[in-house]
Image (tube, rainbow, N blue to C red; front, top):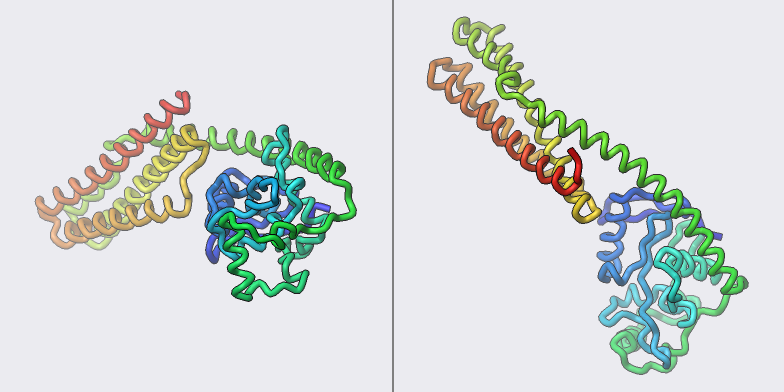
Length: 341
């Protein structure tokens, strides 16, 4: 009765495939909420999104006694025809003891019971088209706008989806049992991810804590000294390889610092960084730093005089100081808010 699968999209990118009962991660859930808000043009408190594999939907406003107010003001017409808004007001009214998980699942089941969700695609069905109403007609669009803005439109106030075959109390009980089952899976998954996150945090913090400039730059210093004495191809190759290894090492320190920043944010807000944008920003910084260090290495290898070698050394030490300094500051902040040592 709970349906098949659907995909949540962020622009042209598939974020996650949803199938009721398949629990999503916190990161996927955050992206789903953002995608739902953008797609529906609604605020976070105006959408219903669970981490239990159900497609997001708009949250119906509480209808007035005369059945007005069933649409959010300013709602786009493409969203206003979502069938959840046109369930009977007694169905869309959230019970006092009904949390958002149960509420969202119950509405999903109510739509399924009324055959308003395509079982193959999980896409909702336009209830007006089923009644041979032309949703693209300008008069219809204007009446939806008027109704959403609080004006009285008698036929829209009376328009509701017919009941399905399943009693409402049975649907409510089923929604509660599903929510209880899926919630247990979700928190078990959260615990596994929390344990894994703690392991990753500890490992990356050790990497930052154990960083030592003298040790990290020893191979570059040895290669530079050898090249200063013997400017052959082999000595040049060893210098280049030593610098490339150093670049990779400080990149790893930078990524460890990103873990610290994300851990701090999770501890403060419950949500991590937007991983894709954070990594893109970090990769841009890494690329610029690597280009500069390679430029300084090339200058020193072409003319290994004291000035160029000193310039390379300054560039390397400054890069190390910048990355490790930032990573250690981020680690201190993360430890302070996480209460870890």
